[in-house]
Image (tube, rainbow, N blue to C red; front, side):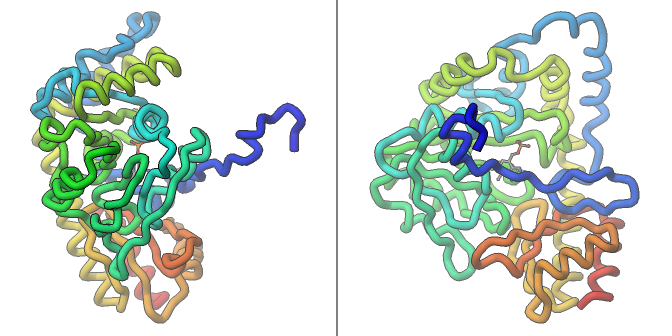
Length: 351
Ligand code: PMP
């Protein structure tokens, strides 16, 4: 170990994101990006900002972006927090809201950044097993805890919890914060954003990376009671005064302005998801029901890791997790119809 490293770094297992290879010649279905370009209005707004104003710092409070989000979501501006992608928003939420003597709870199969933040911020946690059918059962979270975190829809399973279950959880667990990570909510789930005025311990986190095709711009946000939001602002202020650059601020505002583009792309993805799901089932895959822009699948006759490697040789990248219970599964991002056809053609040779 390097003598200059802190104990924290020595023990930290960093998050390893899906690979980001050069796009030429590749069908990239591994990190759940949107296959369609962002709204032209976003690109125009960013072009408009490319000039002398880059000399100046951006608004540290991102007020105009918060207003655009607040208007869109029907909440007050003081109920909105913005960050550099929802990963950063989650990091601040873990720091600001979950440090508690009791362990926090999240599913055993979920977004693998959660245990990384716990390691970084010394937050005790316990994982709660998903059911046999890979679902979150809220009764399993009704025990003393220092906070509850889960994605809805969950990743990498794609399974969604009905809003009524989240409401029950919030009513029955009132002594700790419940963070609902809605990175994929626009592809079929029902957002808990409507509940933030009724439950002061609910934080809903969303991103522009998926349904608004802006993974490269890094804009995420949280919605919640003004006091929860204030806690996040305090942490942010001590970390980076300017969480979003000028391009992200104007691009983010424009993204909420173009409802038609948003509707078109999410409908296209949901349609392709249904079609791809059928195509994979026809090839003998077991396909979990998905409310996200990816499918979680396994083939009873083929090893998941070997299938992923064979697809890689054909320049098709999907995600394979070498984790207990899911080592036979592949997580496949819903791409364009053309990309999904290339995938189906390759798989029909392999299975
Ligand atoms: N939450 C979940 C469940 C995710 O899968 C992702 C994407 N990897 C994120 C949050 C973070 O997305 P971003 O930082 O691009 O907003």
